[in-house]
Image 1 (tube, one colour):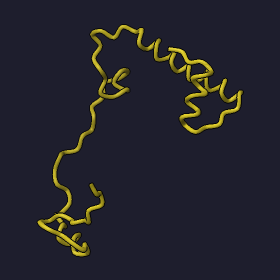
Image 2 (tube, rainbow, N blue to C red):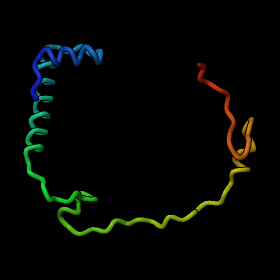
Image 3 (cartoon, rainbow, N blue to C red):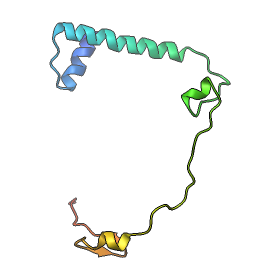
Length: 100
């Protein structure tokens, strides 16, 4: 995929940007450079390659340090809801803000 100057002008218009001609040319080359990079990446055959859980895993074995999934703080729901104007069944009640 490759863009031309009219595409850049349309994108700038949609984004409400005013680009000078040199900025437009620079933007065109940068965006087309990005598209070229994406096309080169798409051309690489990745059949049979497993996805990495972490980018460093490509160069060394790593183990992710995951913490145990345990409750670490006490339940302070009632204390936290004391200052609320309206509470019902442990939930904050708020006024309706969307009208139909």
